[in-house]
Length: 239
Image (cartoon, rainbow, N blue to C red; front, top):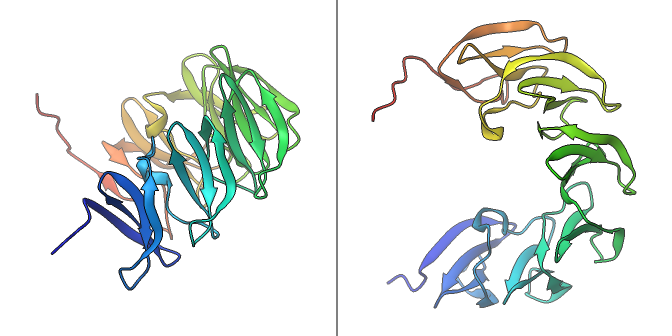
């Protein structure tokens, strides 16, 4: 008879479980490896173990525990991101900074929202504009975009005004902003040398020079993985 309200898949020999409305982790034998004493996270999809650590929430504060449930980074943060390239963002009130895997602050809190690091760059949002900082907190690309994505294969999608283009690490718009913006979830990063874009409400794929590899003819598409991308043709929305 199942005793857990929710169970997720195993990651690094531990599985996230919900028991009496508290979060814990079981081992592959089904034993409680980490006592179910933590509060439900704000984002349930990002709290599995990775590189020996899992993010947890106690009350309104977040921290990181090891595979045995011991705190490696105490739950002292109002908000806490996942580690990416050795750094995780944290939030105290309305300021954001970054810590390393020891919990040491490497970028002091600043009054703007931040994202994860990708290729040594992290997005920041000041007011309603997005730019990028490096791993020591220097602003390398001034906030100027209405929307922007993470760097992948040397490029990041951005929306200077109302169309999507791609910039390099210096902030130069190397692919003209001529594609349509729907929501951030629909925007494509460069994967395996191609990016998913929208033109005339149809998805296609371009190369790093902005030229069509597959012209816009799909109703939906995913990024490439291992040489393949899933596409949809003839999809109809129903009211």
